[in-house]
Amino acid sequence: MSEESSTLADIPGLMRIENAGREELTAHCMELTHAVYPHHQVYGQYCTIHEYVDCPPELVYDYLRQGHHLEEWTCSLRDFAPTGTPGLWVGHDRLEDDTRIYCKVDAHPESMTVDYHCSWDQGEKLWMIYLMRVVPAALVLDRPGSVITWTNCRHPYYDANPHPDKSPRPDRPWVGDYWDLFYAGHTVEMNNLKAILEHRHRRGLPVCTAPATAVTR
Amino acid sequence: MSEESSTLADIPGLMRIENAGREELTAHCMELTHAVYPHHQVYGQYCTIHEYVDCPPELVYDYLRQGHHLEEWTCSLRDFAPTGTPGLWVGHDRLEDDTRIYCKVDAHPESMTVDYHCSWDQGEKLWMIYLMRVVPAALVLDRPGSVITWTNCRHPYYDANPHPDKSPRPDRPWVGDYWDLFYAGHTVEMNNLKAILEHRHRRGLPVCTAPATAVTR
Image (cartoon, rainbow over all chains, first blue to last red; front, side):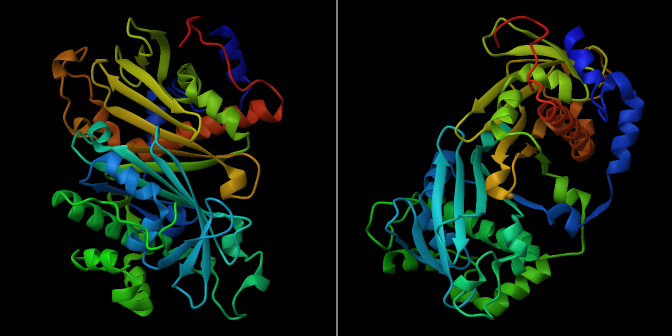
């Protein structure tokens, strides 16, 4: 450990049992812990929500990785169709009139991560990224079913539309205007997702549905 | 869409633009959004923290997937050595005297997830699971470096030690007694992780160090 220790000794600001001790560590943690936290502190820069779903993780993952299901569980993403670019589709975000949303799914079965790379108005740079993951509830909650985590990070484009010229009209509100409502909006959508998956799974129905546009996605 | 629509129509509780409309959706989201949130609501059942680290994602992932580095960035996990079970090591959690912690790393390079499956006192059922993920900040924040997310779920064993007989002594506090301090404790550890990685990366030093016990892990 001597080499490691000497390296760590050069790094300012570390708080470890060796330099802080149990009592100081505990006292510091109690100082960081509060009865309430402001919205901005919790959801200002990153927005993560979690939900338990009574549906096996393999089925949840399979549902999420097929992006056309966004048309079911999101509030306002509809009518996806493939573009000329493989894997990239385009639909409408009905939150605003005439607003196109481009989307690509990046999913990994080993870790059951499903990332939706999206953007309003243009499909060249997909910067609105919805990071989701399905975790077997048997592992983390000792019960059947799944835990779904969903994280968004506040990309600077939320605060300033990089392509106002691509807006369908000058007064169309920008997606980033809604950032402060993401915690709430994503909670509503997560509730939809849970309701759909549990309804179908508990009745023995297939959880997946066919895409409206019959094209391999 | 007719088949899908009829299926969704059978599912109670969905809130979608078709049935709620923009104004009702927005009003509902504003009701869910508060100036402050109680600790229990935000960190009671799941505890996720996020941090930006000025170090390339590949290096951060490589550092995290090598479990012996837990000895550097955690406050109290020390002295890991391999057990007879491949991939499983045992160390000490110096938060309490004579407390052993067992740990196994499950990492996936494609999604850059690194999960630490741990347990105090016994290595047969690893139920304390630290779910971490490295996300390229270029994608989600439009800057170099990494975003690290870290989620814990409140497994029922946090609330009731399933093996009190394996405690080194009857009055040893239980790891779950600290659940309410996890947000704070993990924030301290995430700060350590950020400090170590940024210190080494900015100086051009290797971010990884050799394990104290010279065994392939």
